[in-house]
Image (cartoon, rainbow, N blue to C red; front, side, top):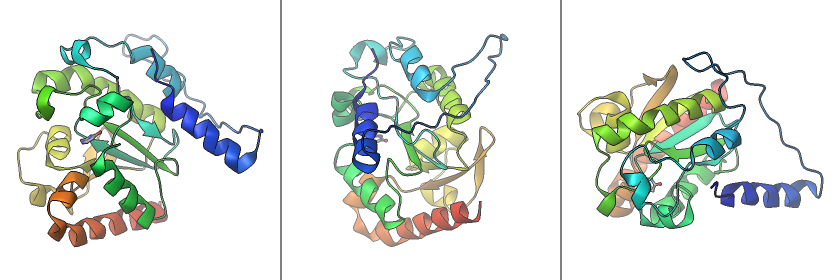
Length: 223
Ligand code: URA
């Protein structure tokens, strides 16, 4: 079953802005799967299609499937590693304390999870005790992320934290060695920055994270 929480929030905000007229702009997508069959027509359709996933063991243990949240046409796609306890409960990525920190960083560059930003995780279900994703789980789940990228068509992907960065890039290096480099993931430029939880743990990281967010904004303004 799809959790309609984020769709509901989107429609309530649209109502506040535009009254009872609802503007939903869908990209006209014609994705063809590897076997030649037609792919999902929209992010919402894709969410519906995969939300009962039981491909790996995490599916049986989850409370909610955490597909992602935000603007389906966003230029900026933020990717964390996996849902935590709060995200599993609510069904939306980055809703705990780290999420509030992320919202602050986004608001400082005049963006939000509804405004030109989409947020999701590499894994859509919570690993027990918030352990790092296992390679076998990433292998099962990564095609979902690839499809999200095809549907959203972001101009820039930002991996939040070392685990997301190393998982997406297949590198086992320190965060400092992944930052300040424009990598590529699934044909899209990718940067790596601090996980918002790391900024809560150590505020010394905040100036560097702020530099990353300013870089992100400048990059997107030029595109
Ligand atoms: N950390 C993540 O990487 N993702 C979330 O959704 C929440 C915390």
